[in-house]
Image 1: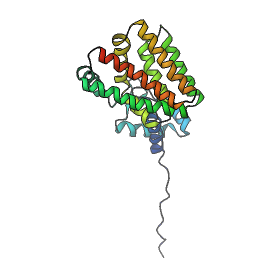
Image 2 (image 1 turned 135 degrees about the vertical axis):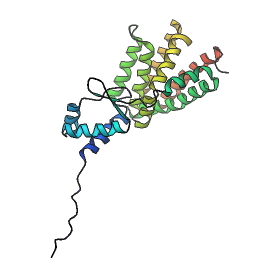
Image 3 (image 1 turned 30 degrees about the vertical axis):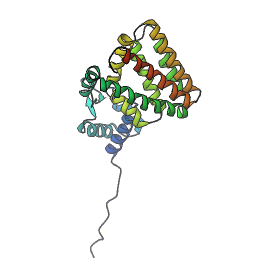
Amino acid sequence: MPPQKLKPISHENLGDRVAAEVLRLIAAGEVPPGERLPSERRLAEMLEVSRVSVRAGLQKLKAQGLLNAVRGGGTRVAEPMSAGDPALAALAQIDRGSLTDLLEIRTLLEGWAVRRAALDASEEEIAEIREQFTRMEDPAEDKAQADVDFHMAIAKASQSTVYRHLLGVIRSTLTEMLHYHRFELFGRPEDDATVMEQHRTIMEAIASRNPDAAERTMKAHLDWVRGHYVAAGLIA
């Protein structure tokens, strides 16, 4: 009699596993758009697979447009919104309604994020928020970039993969906005002192695990920013 038909033995596609893990890393904001991934050797060690499997997984993500090869070697996370960011920043400068929308959206999202951070941040993540605040105090640092990194640290502390990814995608637009804020809209020394005190209270509310205070102080900061837009005649 002919042998019974054998069922194929299911096995994990290691390349797919690598792709899934790298995608999870990107979505979690561990490697933001534009940043390099760890080397193939390091990824192979982290995932306990061969470099051949790592290469296969990375190639799959490159084919999907999620990764780009770097000249001279290495792989970088693609910036899918890079073409849209300058347009969004320009729109914010010429459309008063867009400025209002952006501030309101930030108020809603960042108020929610600081609540999450106050509830769920690890001690290491709180330490990172403090580190970015210290950078903001350092006159040798770019105060706008340090400001962005402060907000990115809060995003990480929120434990929300979705929020971290969203903020990572619009990071360049946020950077442009904060450069405008810190160097033009309210660039006086007394404004810097106010901004630093506002960020200090946000940080301390998170560190003290007080979500209501964290949300309240973030909203107060963004309301203060909105007041400058009104005073400058940018929005009604």
